[in-house]
Length: 329
Image (cartoon, rainbow, N blue to C red; front, side):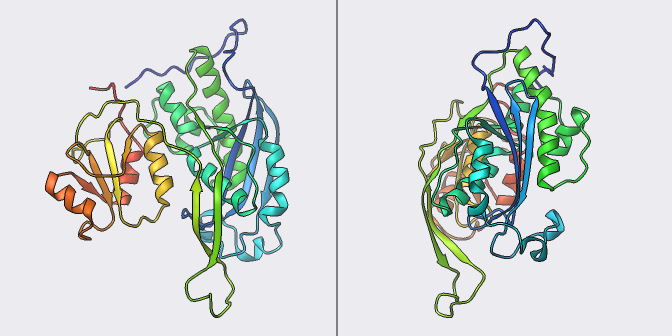
């Protein structure tokens, strides 16, 4: 376990020159987690270079479809019916993001949802870098039992009033990010900044069964592609995953078959956790993730041949919450 480096910056301590000059702490609520899901509310807290709040903004968004898990976010179709479309708020959203590092809890998810909405609107979000507060808490070695937002908030004494409400979640994250940022500055810790590249293609087609009937209720995006090449994993491969133990940075992970969460999102989550995302199975593969281990796909067959451990998507999601550092023995 790394030591807790949450010290404070003394008045005479210079601020790291390499740190960003401003941040946009973002939270979005969505109709779900898949590639064709939509944003239904968004909030942005703008912070200066030292994490002080400049202003905040919140909006509902009409997703033009079923709102999804109302029992989580509380936003019904009736509430969202009169809300603006994303194209109506895209310009204001851009003004809040422009020139700043996007900060979010599990930032790859928020960024992917935002990037898709802009791609649908034939525009690009003015975001070039993102910072995940989960990754930052790991860099700081915070003694957290898990990486939930409420756990991070409790560590810094931040009171959460309305979980899964975009404005309150963004407020909570902004208040927890400020001491995290100052602790990083005091220890001259490298911020885990990652590049954001916009989606370059998007096409919408009606859902199956609606093409001929002209039914309402939406479409299914069939083509989207991020314009980026994932960087090489910086950690050595520690070997195969062992049941009952955590994943370790550098492990080679492959995916096979359909997933409930968008495949690119899962792969980005794995990469951000320090895993090596592989497109094929070999004797060096640490783990195969598949929801259908009896499918007989080439990856599943090779995993059997090589004795590669196999877990389903849900188990992999749990394992991603606590990936052991590469240096840990």
